[in-house]
Image 1 (cartoon, helix red, strand yellow):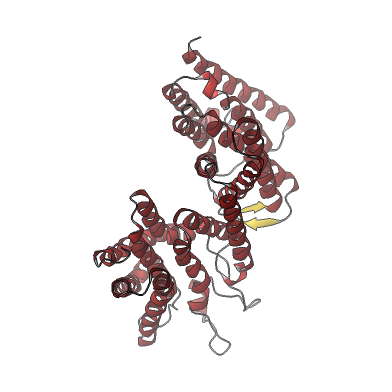
Image 2: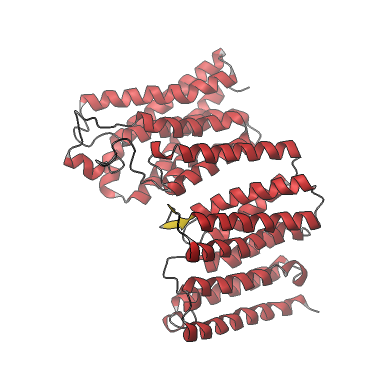
Length: 468
């Protein structure tokens, strides 16, 4: 049978299922989330068959393109959006999840030629775990936490973990050469990591992040032995537990903390312990360094209007946790770029610009926390100098311990001091402009680009021969 003929068959199944759900929606008035997931789950199950239905990635790409075109028509063409489109759009939130779903299927199919297990498990997680989290959270969610957009429930996240665990564990036991301990550990680790990914995703990006993240994690962890997997599970659990206990000492909301745990685990698992030091030091130290009012010098009304992360009058000991995962991504972006380059080109010396990126970010966070009252005063300028020195010592000190305090390493660290100073002073000068003319989300993007650019000065450390 010509496998191209399976394309209209899949599209007919999609259209027929949507028509049936629309009819049920009109007659029974069910929860819009339930309707959306009753389309999500069956279509996910259908896509599981693609390795056996299609011979070429081009066939799946054509099918994905047609599906995306149809789904976007339902979204943008008003007569259809108010009718059949309400099967997906009835939830009333901004989401492009229905577009990311077929896109992730096409990408996964292209990444897994001749490896159906590496295709099936991520799709199974996407189809079952994501739906389980949404349905359980909607129906039974009581213990809520702040996510990137709105709230999610602990019950929903635990349901996601359990569904992911079985979606990984059972196929590995039945269809792979992984032993029982390895499959159990891999399923647990993937369950936790993909749960973190789902918790921080926004605007339907979980339909892209979950399958692609699951594929990459599965591919890397399948090659590990039991001791390596145990070490990863212990470190992951320790990071999640520690950051959750530390949450009242930070300005990060719950979703951002989970994102920070994910970044920390990624840096450690890819680079090793030296690459975990910088992000961990930043998370631990920035709440201790940024400006905090005292009983003798409380915040003025002008300061309260701008410095909304400061402790409230009801709880003077805890920061107001307003920063979401965008802040975490902004701070981590430059470092992750250097980590990627270091691993891709086997250049461990790039830990110097990597560390400089976090040193600059720590100094910038402290400068951003300065009071707007008397911003250009001599006192604030001395505070900038203090933040530069402390950020440099806290980030480059541990690196020198790991790398060894040789003459070249010390000279390279001094390059880091210059870079930290230039970054902090430049940000001190341009911060008022950012606050006046740009929305917060745009400021996070600019800060990521700014620190990435400044961290390039760390290449001077490599030129001095550091890390060789």
